[in-house]
Amino acid sequence: MFKKILIANRGEIALRVIRTCKEMGIKTVAVYSQADVNAMHVRMADESVCIGPAESTKSYLSIPSIISACEITGSEAVHPGYGFLSENAKFAEILGDHEIKFIGPSVSHINTMGDKINAKNKMVEFGVPCVPGSNGAVNNIEDARITAREIGFPVLLKAAAGGGGIGMKIVFDDPQLETLFFQAKSEAKKSFNDDTIYIEKYLEKPRHIEIQVFGDGKGGGVYLGERDCSIQRRHQKVLEETPSPGVSAEEIKEIGEISANAISKMKYEGAGTIEFLYEDKNFFFIEMNTRLQVEHPITEAVFGIDLVKEQICVASGEGMSFSQESLEPKGHAIECRINAERLPTFSPSPGNIKEFHSPGGIGIRMDSAIYNGFTVPPHYDSLIGKLIVHADDRQMAVRRLARALDELIIDGVYTTLDLFKEILNEEQFKSGEYNIHWLENWLTDQAQ
Image (cartoon, rainbow, N blue to C red; front, side, top):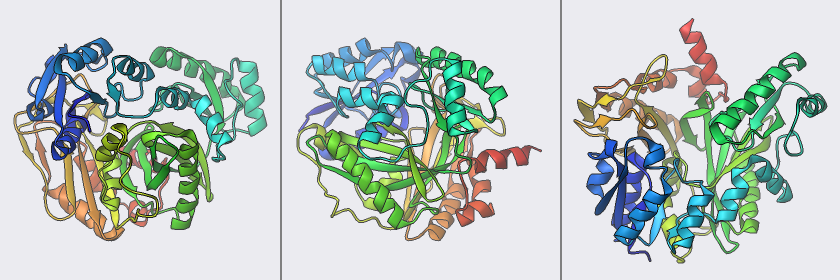
């Protein structure tokens, strides 16, 4: 087992990894930018190293700085968290060159799944159902027209190297295609330095269902249920729950076994998530994330498993502590992503936390790195906390979440807390009859 792990991240995910390491008796190293000198993950780690100024490109995304921090502290392994360098194959490769273990999948798996075209081709090979679309990249507008007409409008233009909705355009008819095609390529080039675009059929009312998978790197693989991530705005997840209120247990078992079989054949190592759109009782693969997800706590809640601990154990060579047969989900869990944003524009709201009170009680988990007097910096993602509830069933989980939201206090910055209180009162949420467009449509209606 590792004796010392460096966490190449910040905020609540860095703190979350530190907690598990402490329970495992592993020393931790925090890295931080000058803007995070007073951050909680810096306070909680055994050691800390400043790796640069506030700008993430000069600190949390600086591979030389993080490698230097590993060398200075004698760190044997790096946990990347999510975001930043968590899916950067070059980072994982350079760590390997320095004989430092990257806690995550192999470089080849990060590369393959990081390119959405290659990922889709690999999943087709493994028998995973995929959205109808182009066979690879669409290089020019003529090919785009041919493909779009073959699969039928509406279609979705997507950046092969993309994520978070960047470079993604919905095209409803032929006249729109040319303008949106070049817009998508331009956005992709600007954000990812790669303007490769492919086309998929646009599903009009799908749910976003993701399957949590885990592999031992030797051909063993399992799935740990699903997460319904359909409550989203501009392709960004807002609230997640498990199990899904709109998909049957039998359907999840079938797609879960297909997903586990795929990662077994890949000899995938560690945690990953295979994401699908679900419509009319059909699943369609959209992408695979080769890292821990923001919403992983709800899976931990229903299965009673520490996924970070399992990541560390597999990376150290000890293997997984569970098998598919031993996995038995219990109850229902929901997570709210709480952002420092001003409603209704969702504009960032950095500033000083004047008062913070975390809710408590049975089935409540608050993953956050803020505290009274902490200053939320303007340089990073606006996520400041995740409120997770677990209960015996969905109805009780919703009630528990409503109670926890009332108890949670964050003063000094604007937050999205009120949005969740309103969502919980909506009939479509209560009934579970929502899709990936529901929140956007609801917000539009509220603004009118």
